[in-house]
Image 1 (cartoon, rainbow, N blue to C red):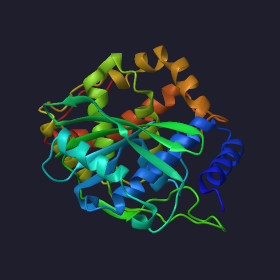
Image 2 (cartoon, rainbow, N blue to C red):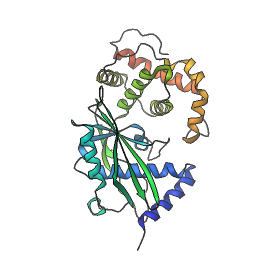
Image 3 (tube, rainbow, N blue to C red):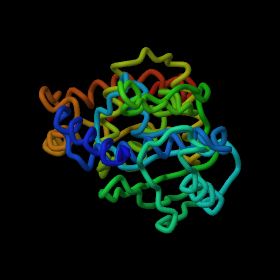
Image 4 (cartoon, one colour):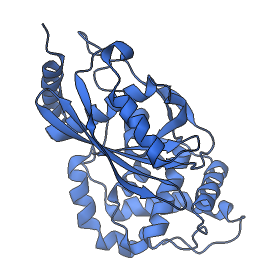
Length: 300
């Protein structure tokens, strides 16, 4: 009898070598994708949309261009962390018969735990659990928020998972709700404004660099996304952004280099000063619009 879990683990090892990433990276990505598969097949499929780093494959033809450990979800209906925990337990209980396929992974319901609850601008929190693939135990972390505004609208589509084109045992692509790029840019901007010169979220610069160079954005739609996102968090739109200053770029150049050792940019890492200037220049106009068209000080 074929050992599905052992077979998939061996395929993950091969992909890790081919992509020059760690086995832990591949295991976490696989576990996160298979939890999304369960969400897509469940009665909660329309209650949540995917956000955060797990969106990168959806924008990059299935490629995960940087490590990400968490699944980030936005609740599209009213809810709380307790209800979300019950949903996660329900996903753990789903069988191969219910899914219509065997992905070899077991999400262990006895390990499901609330790590923290967040209240304020975006209610929510974090759930942690463990998954098992053959002999490997994989940490799974899910961050959820409720009621974040989505601009211009939620995207519904197939998520490009690993092994979707496998010749022997292809896995179906989950059909899920996802953030549009505009809302992702707005939330990244909010993080930069919140943490300022003390920002340690290097991934946000990477994501903004990738998004702003990949998509043609409307300044008007970005401006609306900025207004709605900052209003939800009860924060004024920024007049200055120390996290996009030349001084910040100079002080954190080595951090940027280290971060990109594990991204697709590793063979030709762009200068951090150029990255920050590019983000700053592109966001200037929509930020001015979001503040009513008034003249702004230069960002950074």
